[in-house]
Amino acid sequence: MAELKKIAILGSTGSIGTQALDVIRSNSNSFAVEVLTGNGNADLLIKQAIEFNPNSVVISDENKYQYVKNALTPYDIKVFAGNKAISEIVQMDSIDVVLAAIVGYAGLESTISAIKAGKQIALANKETLVVAGDLVTRLAKEKGVNLYPIDSEHSAIFQCLAGEFHNPIEKIYLTASGGPFRGKDTNFLRSVKKEQALKHPNWEMGAKITIDSASLMNKGLEVIEAKWLFGLKSEQIDVIVHPQSIIHSLVQFTDGSMKAQMGLPDMKLPIQYALGYPNRIKSDFTRFDFMNYPSLTFEPADVKTFRNLALAFESLNRGGNASCILNAANEVAVDAFLKDKIGFLQMSDVVENCLQKVDYIANPVYDDYVSTDCVTRIKALEFISNCKSQIV
Ligand code: NAD
Ligand code: MG
Image (cartoon, rainbow, N blue to C red; front, side, top):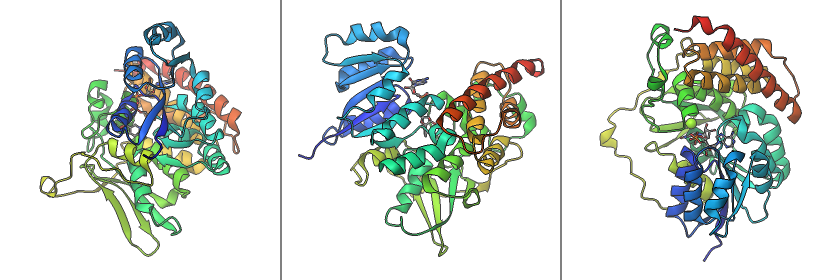
């Protein structure tokens, strides 16, 4: 029997983390769990640990350490707490692949630490590349580490590139569902509530990415992610709205030929492809039926109404720490929207304001990203408290 690939799942209690465990459960002859980490949901982390019997678990929230420790005492599983512990544990010799599925900037440090230790990365945490794509991709190259994309669009591009890595890309098209507010105008968007924004038509995901999908910031972050993963210029990246979410993205080569990857929307497929690469593993995922989709449609993205996509392109073109500013401002804005502190459209105001106000750094090093993130969060919170009176 072939050796089991040993996986560390960072963020195992989230939407991607739990689906990754579904994939591993169905393929226990290929994969084993070496590390699990979670933040808030200690009970789920304990349940996962008992089922998958990892070497170690880390609970980020240090207040929950004793609770997790007590529950796992009867088992031969080590328990640690805090995000520093995650960054240390990813360097453990026995780990083959680190699946980075923490949400937001919080996933940056542990991913960098895993790359430094030469671990292969299955990357769901797109914010890592948005914040510090230059640093992260250079480090990965230096360490001979592959970044296997889990984001469905980037997995699609990666799958289209199989056998083509020596052929130059003319451009790529990232497809977008358009989210729950496709076709709506600013009047409508001004008063939408979080309950409406949290209902995505095609995908079930964590709260932050679901709001990002509704505001098109998710597609903006994905444009930046694609730039770093595939070494592209911003002019080579286009976004096309495709409401059925069947074509997951496309590559156009220099001879004009286009390759697309398609299938029903199910994150387990890109997760399994990233973990199993270069092999495709037989699965019983529901198969696509053409008769259920007599027409696949396409339309341009409305960047006037959904300003976040334009702001993401702007930050990409500015380079330096601009996308780090965009990301931090957006994380604060999404959190404020989810707490009913600002309206839907004001999320873009927060991002735009921070892009104007936070100092630009042309060639940032790691510490510059850390301070940019911190300063931007302060500026974003200031802006939010000043614009409070406008909220309906
Ligand atoms: P989620 O909110 O469902 O899960 C996030 C995980 O990270 C949880 O395990 C949580 O405990 C952990 N976490 C949260 N804050 C933390 C912190 N401060 N420190 C340490 N751990 C923390 O999110 P998700 O939807 O699974 O998304 C995870 C990542 O994958 C995001 O970057 C997202 O953009 C990306 N992604 C998700 C999907 C999807 O379908 N859900 C698709 C593509 C990409
Ligand atoms: Mg995606």
